[in-house]
Structure formats: C-alpha cells, structure tokens
Length: 579
Image (cartoon, rainbow, N blue to C red; front, side, top):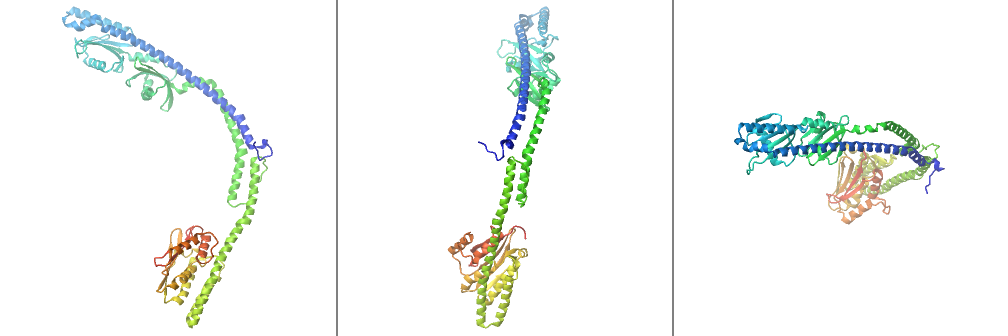
C-alpha cells in the first residue's frame, strides 16, 4: 500500500501529473499516430501494388513481342531462298540473283512491318560478301557488324544483346565446316525510340519515370531525358536491392522505386516517383493532421506548465536552498504554504537546518576548541624540558667560574624566553623559529664547543615567511645532543639544512652520533604513524602531532639514517598555496 507524506491523496503531485498525462497526452497521441501510420501504409502499399502490376504487364507484353520476333528470325534462318542465295550464289545467273535478292528484301520488310519495336532487319551474307537491310536494300558486306555479332554469338547465350545504344536479336546459319564462319547472320535491331515511347505509358504520376536495364551490363533505355539522369544516378543502388519496392535519396530528394525482373529477357524494368507523391492520397487527412498538431501542442503546453508549476519551480527552490546551506547560510529556512510532497520536503529541510545549527554549536565548535587546547598543551610541554636543560648548563658554567660565559649564556637565555613569552600566537614565521633554534645551538656550543661542531645552513628567502608552530626545530636539535652527540667519543657533527619544492618545505636535522638500530627506527616510525594516544606525548611525537594538526595529511616528521652515520629527521610541511 502506498503512503504519501501529504494530508490526502488528491494533494499528491504524483497523482496530479499521472492523471494529467494519461487523460490528455496518451489518447490524442495514440489516435494521431495510429491514423497517420495506417493511412500512410495503405497509400504506399496501394500505389506500390498498382505500379508493380502495371510494370509486370509491360514486361510480359515486351516478352511476348520478343518471342514473336524470335520466331520470325528463326523462320528466316530456315528460309530456302535465303539459304540458296548463301550457298549457290556463284552458280546463279544474274536473273536468279536479282530475283533472290528481291525476295529477301520483301521478306525482311515484312518482318520489320510486323512489329512497331523493330527499327531494321539485316542479313549479313558472309559467303557472298553482301549485307541486306529492310530499310537500305543491298549494299557492301558490313564486316565490322558481322564480326561483332559473331563475337556475341560465341560469348553470350542470351536472347537480347546490347549494342550501338539499343537491343538486338541475332541468329546465324552454320556453314557446316568445322571452325568455319557461319553462312549468314540475321540481325533484328529494336527501335530504342519506340521502346521509350512505350515506357511513357508507365509514367502515371507527376515527376515519375521509367527505364529498362540489362541485367548483364549497365546499359539501359529510359523513357525520357529526366529518367536517363535518374537512371544514371540510381543504377548501382537499384540493381543491388533485392526488394521489389524500395526508396533512394538522390540529390537531396527521396524517391520510391518499383522494379520487376524478367528472367526470360534478362531485363529489369523500373518505375520511380517522388516519395511525396505517395503522400498525396493523405491530403484528405491534412485537416485532421493540423487538428492533431494543434491538440498535441496544446497538450505539450499544458504538460509543460503543470510540470513547471508542480515540479520544476518547487524543486528549483529546494536546490537553491541547499546551495545556500552548502555556502554556510544556515539561517535561511524555506517559507511555504504547500501541502504536497514538496511541502513535506520543505518542512523537513527547515528542521534539518535547525539540527545542523545545534550540531555545529555542540560538536563542531567544541572539536575546534579541543584541537586548539591540545595544540596549546603540546607547546607548553616543551618549555619545562628546555628550562631544566638550561639550568643544568648554567649550573655547569657557574661551577667553572667562567663569568664571561655566564653573562653571555644568560643573555642568550633571556632572548630565548623572550621568544617564548612575548606573543600568544600559535604560529610564527619560520625565520623566527630558525633564529631561535640557531640561538639554542650557540648556547650548546658554549658547553660542547670542543667536541661537537654545528653546520647550520642559511634559510632560503622563499621559506622565511612560512608560518610554523613554535618550537619544532629546537627540540629535534636538543634530542640529537641528548641521545646521540653527547655519547660520541670522537668529534661530533650536527647539521641543519633547508629544502624547498613547489608544494613542500623541508627542514632536515641530522648528526653523526651513535648509529640507530633498525628495530628502534621502525618503532619510532610506528609511533609517529599511530593515531593512538597510548604513547607519552613528548619529544618527536609531540612535534609530529603539532605539525600534523596544523598542516594536515602528508606533513610531519620523517625518520631515516643519515649519511653522516646517525639519525636523520626531516620536518615536512605541505604547502596548500605558494607562500
């Protein structure tokens, strides 16, 4: 069972949108789409069927006509008078030759007049070197024509051949000699212009056309010049399609093609028409189409307005409020009077703002104060340790009675404690921290000048203004003296150097004191990397935690063996921006 966070179902934005969409959009669109597709499909199929049927009748008529011509042609090949002319020409006298030629001309003329598709009928008599034509009587033997026709007889076993821009029928009479040329070849030339005229009857629609194409070559005869250009552009695509009806886009305009193939003739007939012609029977639905378009547009406007009013506008208000909250504005509740789902969301959003404000007051601010108090406490741990060591050095100098060095030491010690107490700031420039640490090494030199040398590098200008917590270098130096350098039997060396990269600054403290064992080094690294508070918060762990609190992940202490032989401590400070 659905539950809605509103007072009643009728106030639900979900129900409103669903009912609006179902009651307005679906019936109109479904009816319009159905009527359009039904009408278009019926019109296309009807025109295609009628065109295909008309083309089929034409191809059948053409086939019957060609069959009749073939009968006439083969009947002529068997004609006794023609065969006698071809064989006994040399034995005939002049009268017999003239009578035979007149008979042959009359026979050819009779065949030519028997069909409107015949342009001329030739008999190429190779044996007597004469060519007889129904239209041109008797003239010299056409050797070129004879050779071309003879070549086609040897290569193509087809009824029609394409030659000299038209179709031809040919038949021959063998000489009876092995490998010898035929006695004569009968050639019927079809009239291309009559074929074009006959195809014009297929052009039933405006801008339509037709053409007949030889299946074995690219030769074709078109009904008119316009059809010839269409045939030239569409020949390859038209022949490659196996469908009887298909569409092609030529010169930016779409055409519908219908084709019928005749296996007997080896020809394929094509009729084409603009695709828009197919849509003409739909003109009676134009008014309905406009009504559907207007109704659909009105539906879209209603739906768009409903969506904007009930969904987009309230959602946009909610998104803008979230963005203000992300920017830190927690005192901007959403004022509204809505009772739908968005009203419920607005109410919960306002409640969330109040809870966030309470959590910030009770948790976030408290955590910041705890971190600051921890930082203060960590800094204060260092001062008693150094004070103890300072009194130890002063006590040593007093026992030796060296008043000059005691004076020098007390001045240094005063400067040292002035640095500690003169400001309550948590962070100081690295230049001041470095000067303070250098002063510490000078204090230690009063005690260990004969046994321990100090190499204190110059601080680069690019690092002088970096803000760092107080007392992060001096305790590391003090640790080197106490745990390493004081135990060396030979001359000790303490080195302090500075390194700067684009996003990191490093302060390196190393010495040549007692070598540190691998197990101890790993233990120190483990303590530095541990987030547990179980270890005593002194020494290097103290400094590591302060730097980590100040600069975040990636900062802190890094421990390794020094090339000098002792411990190497690198203070790493990750820089968030160029300082």
